[in-house]
Image 1 (tube, helix red, strand yellow):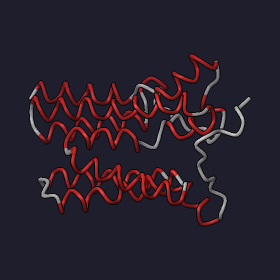
Image 2: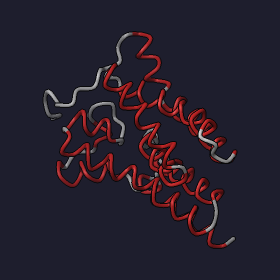
Image 3: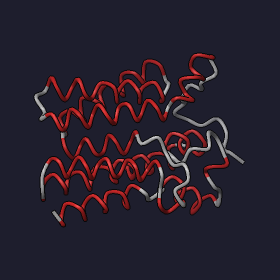
Length: 202
């Protein structure tokens, strides 16, 4: 019981590490929350400063969901792995190291957590994300569709019900956190993602 609680707490602390904020602050001397969409996640970092900064942030955000979920699953149980992955998502959303201010939209961390508890499902979800993104070039749409696909994929691939339930709850959270993107999509003002930035934020 104590091991599980420590792993879940560690998941929240790891999730709270705002790598998008730290990377841009360290190498650019800029608060990423003041440029682009104002989000600390990898999409805003990539769109604003290019893939040299975006790719490391993506990988770090995935890792902070993956590590606690995998450790919890291997050391204790699927339940603890799920709880630790969920805690990492909460940490990314409201990071302790930013004073619980608004953080990221949890997509990469959610994906990482799923690679820790159900890697085959996560790989299928990643494939869905890539297909939607390449087709439409909306990172927000790709994220929501991929997140929404995971509960169905988990069910079809025979994952235990706690994994399916986690996928469903996390998918709802991802869609809710993208509600402003949904509004922009309906208004036709959502920006399509470009792999190469057109200019660097000043």
